[in-house]
Amino acid sequence: LGLSGPPGAGKSTFIECFGKMLTERKHKVSVLAVDPSSSTSGGSLLGDKTRMTELSRDMNAYIRPSPTSGTLGGVTRTTNEAILLCEGGGYDVVLVETVGVGQSEFAVADMVDMFVLLLPPAGGDELQGIKRGIIEMADLVAINKADGDLVVPARRIQAEYISAMKLLRKRSKVWRPKV
Image 1 (cartoon, helix red, strand yellow):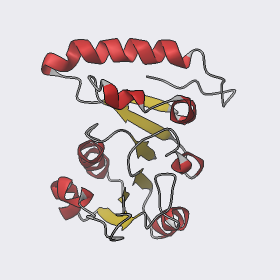
Image 2 (tube, rainbow, N blue to C red):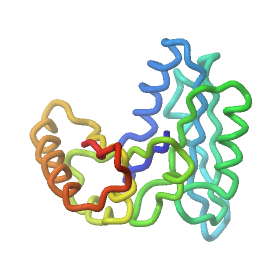
Image 3 (cartoon, one colour):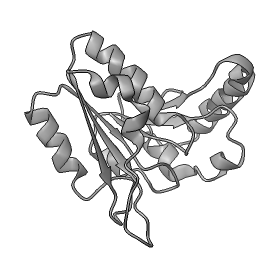
Image 4 (cartoon, rainbow, N blue to C red):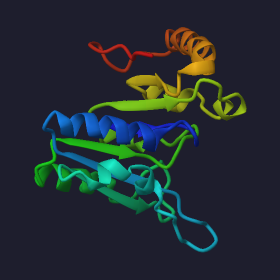
């Protein structure tokens, strides 16, 4: 499962919750979290694991942060190989968290069985950067953080994306992307 979305959409928090649910159901979960690398220093924070404290202590979960090291597309040069290694190591669910989102950070879509785009309910200008490219690749659009005062904006964004996705060319004869 590939996951992408704008900064602040809650990708790591979603993975923490979803991963715990999967391990409680006796799945072995691997998380490959990709962090951006600095174009100046080449360094990377690799901090996504810190948002997954419970999952990182779970014996049925493995979390591997990796830097992009200048690779474009939201993943690393070796993400596909890392997925295969995790599957070979007995992990039956592999979650790939991409760097973040723009119009072209969807290379992971060709590496996974399902590509999920996580969106916040009140993104405003952040959502302006999400154009046709990434929306066309999404198998599922999940509006995250849709509680409390954000229920109404979440429903509005959901309706907008349902409407927008009807205009896109279908990638599959058997699956229609859901919002």
